[in-house]
Length: 502
Ligand code: HEM
Image (cartoon, rainbow, N blue to C red):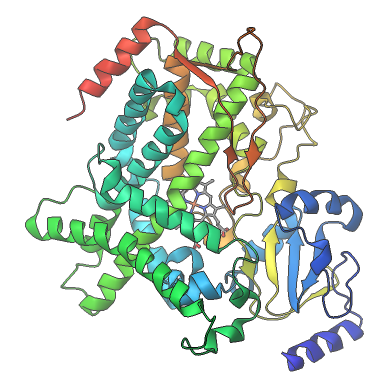
């Protein structure tokens, strides 16, 4: 550590300063400048003060905030060997062993093996076989809304969870909540809490993990082991289920089945146990990565539709004109729905689900635009800053799909697909699948439901002022909207569609 600091200092003294940022205090650096919650809100105005890249230091750890797409592309896309590692999480990653899954795996041969499987099983071509499952689950969600519209949030969680479970393990679309899904939800909640900054002292002082477990007051290993058990259950149970079905020849199409076949499970060049481990953990990573992101983006869509009824009216007009009112939209309709496609982009931009993406870490020292970036620096793409639209002329706070439509504005806003799903070699491998989730859920909601503010006893609109969580995936909580079928025929359409599900 001392050697590293010396070398860093040397480079700085050679005329390469660290990037600009708030003044660092001796020893503690910028600890007092960093908020405990939603750091992205603090970073946003800093862009104006310090520029496109900002450097901070907290207890000896360097943090680089990249405020523009250009800086992110220059470093994460064009220098992948140096910018594709993840920061080390001691409690969740090492002690609970979550770093066996793709999102936390360090860039290297094991990560590459996992990613190869995701390319085979989640490529835009491969995920076409899940369109039917996604359409079924979207219509089941609408059916749930007919019966219990006030439960639109838990029902959405269930729908997002079912899609991931069906796609990953081939579980039936009506998989009951208590079969794997509740367990996965509880595990994800535990992981989310454990990764909040400051949750565990051992993440700030890694040497604590070497303290023997028998020491009084040392609960690090006990907590780590309990978390590990929970994570192992989440990863193992559905995988063992699909393996049994595979052996019996009854497995439905799924990510796990594709992987088992592509590695010619049991007959692979890789030793069987190694192949087994790779499939188990690459499948096990999907729930955490795919469920919450879909759910969060849709919640923001519900808010936008209530707050911007004129956009909702335009979406409906387009759907009635293109799809008609006699059936629900399917993925095949997508190319004919430009306004809806622009609304999906706008939902990804308006309240971006991962405002700081997923952090990276530099492997070696680097130089960029005359600045020095030390080895081991945590790199945060400031995606929130990228969502600020200064090009189209439409205020950035407005929910306006028009900002992405050629001919409607002088210059279209930056395409959110360039930042919402990550960057470079670690870009989201579930992008095609996740994007189709968004399309099907949003289009079928617009085709059948009216979404608006709830009214109080005096008939006044109840304002929607959600709080946003401070998690990696920041979702809105504590809000309500009114959801009603647009007409009895739309309700009947949903019931008929659900009755067709085998
Ligand atoms: C609206 C939906 C989604 C959004 C907005 C989203 C966004 C992201 C982002 C921002 C990253 C970080 C990439 C980086 O480090 O540069 C990521 C990674 C990842 N996503 Fe997604 N995602 C979505 C859906 C999904 C789905 C449906 C799956 C799989 C079923 C999935 C699987 C993954 C995995 C495995 C990673 C880790 C990749 C790695 O570290 O190499 N995502 N996603």
